[in-house]
Image (tube, rainbow, N blue to C red; front, side, top):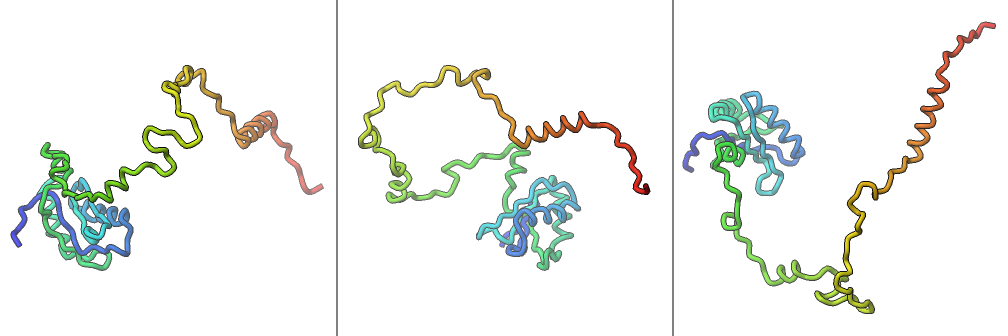
Length: 191
């Protein structure tokens, strides 16, 4: 295998995939790798293809190199991590240096759509009439029948929010409490 040139993104393998949730894994990786410098991003996916792997993106190559040398073979959740430089530049680094290109249909993997898939995706909604026709037994809608209400957009035409019963009761209790805020006399029990 050809050696990969040093870059800001580290490729980490041999991570536990079943024992830990994705967000917990990302947080733990961030906490561990942030001890060596500013971590810009942690990409840890739980898909079949990417489970047990992560990409750690640092701000500079020196920090990434230091972290890689220190943590390669480090036991993480009971498994020794294998760390190397990533083969390609991370999207976040490409955005920072201005070389990021949005993936297009020509650069993305070509997916072939069958006639069956096309007929399923283009099928009418169940219960909807065929295009240009109305439901049986109903007359066709006259043109121009759809119109907006003239006062729908004005604030004065909108309804007033009514308070809930609990809010009314709490307000009444607070009012009674403020009226009866009189100091209590000290009672003695030894009469």
